[in-house]
Amino acid sequence: MVDQEQVFAALRGVFDPELGADIVELGMVQDVDISDDGRVTLGIALTIAECPMRSQIEDDTVRKVTALDGVREVTIDIRAMTQKQRSTVMERARKTARENAVPTRVDPKTRVIAVGSGKGGVGKSSVSVNLAVGIAELGFRVGLLDADIWGFSIPRMLGTDERLAANDDKVIVPVEVHGIQVVSTGLIVESEETALMWRGLMLSKALEQFLHQVAWNELDYLIIDLPPGTGDIQMALSRLLPQAEMVVVTTPQKAAQKVAIRVADMARRSYMPVVGVIENMAGFTCEHGEHYDLFGSGGGSELAAALGVPVIGRIPLDASVVTGGDTGRPVAQADPEGAAGAALRATAQRVIDLVPPVEDETCTARIARLVESLESQPI
Ligand SMILES: Nc1ncnc2c1ncn2[C@@H]1O[C@H](COP(=O)(O)OP(=O)(O)OP(=O)(O)O)[C@@H](O)[C@H]1O
Ligand SMILES: [Mg+2]
Image 1 (tube, rainbow, N blue to C red):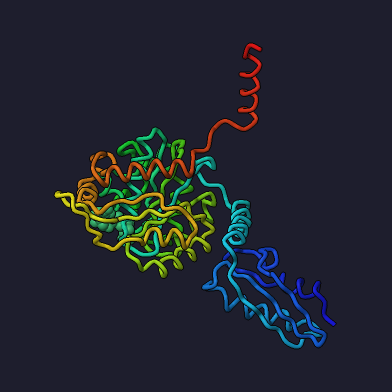
Image 2: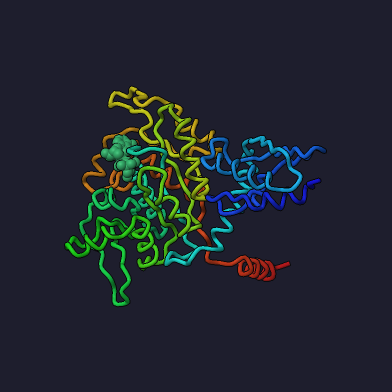
């Protein structure tokens, strides 16, 4: 008769290809029940019930366990993990990713915040630019990486037409604008040769170049403007920069369920922890003080609740955001007292609170300093 140990050994051969580990290691196998007549019932918890890998994991499990001698039938009871189980699994997957990552030129001490969304046109780029400028105004060294390789909008939003150049060591130097270091395909010399070179590269390769060949100058924060969608760039990013975390931009519209599933899935596949949700285009207050919820309300809170994260900002619908983007003067800097400008600055502050800068000082150094200060105090 087959025993638990054999079943577990077979299950170790079932991989979650996206998380890069087997389902036993990932803690997905919750129950194993073996009847006397060789019927095996397995309780398997997936990170989310809508996991796109579900049928593959199910098929592999049935195939591998059925192949064991003495097994007549395999039944799988699929369930979704609890929030807590999910974070444990993600933490494990991130650890593996960190261990396997090839070092980039981005200092491991730099906090990396990727700005993503479940759908396009919700204001990711506007938010990225203003977060970058807002965080820089708080006194931090900030880089902004435009990961929207072909649909770039960062150079226009920052009003720069400077070109990226290489230094003597053949390393790309970011363009400095509004106090931040910026890299975007939109800033690449427009000679036919370079355009061709870039066109020849795969999207993730372009991202790789930005991370491996750009001489970022001692950043506290690197903000990454993600392209619309939940695909390749998002996945490549976490492989290249496993310390990346994500803030999700959404509109107040209550179509959140579908968006939530997409975002949760993106976060899952990319191992990126979600820091929180920024609700953009939230309400409009006209000059007479009347408030209109043009795009509905509640979408941000709904998405945040579904992801189990806080709402970290609400940015009102405000023409100054569009003007700021079109004239290259980000509203967080150009109109800090205006409704959108103030909300964006507050959001930048909240991001810093949630993801504080990595201090240069080590714990040991801090303890030594503390002891020293105690010793120097009169008794
Ligand atoms: N709070 C706001 N109030 C008014 N207009 C806004 C606001 N946020 C963004 N916009 C405008 O909405 C449009 C889309 O914004 P943006 O380009 O930042 O979105 P995106 O999510 O980056 O889009 P894509 O998915 O194409 O990359 C822009 O014209 C921008 O100026
Ligand atoms: Mg964009």
